[in-house]
Image (cartoon, rainbow, N blue to C red; front, side, top):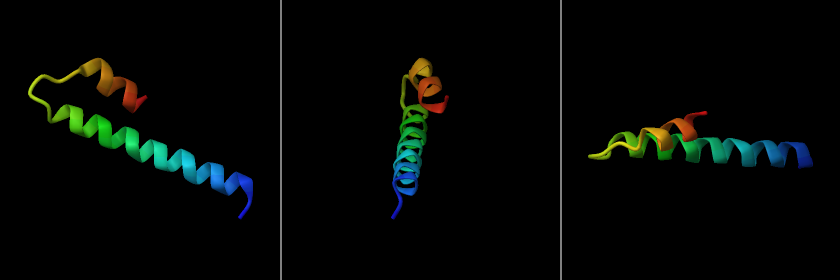
Length: 41
């Protein structure tokens, strides 16, 4: 597999993780909006 494809897959995995973090934080009792915004940028 080419290096470009591998790097792309790593970026996609990181983006999925960021979205999961944002979603989990939005479900918190006290929402850390700065953190949610950071993970969504």
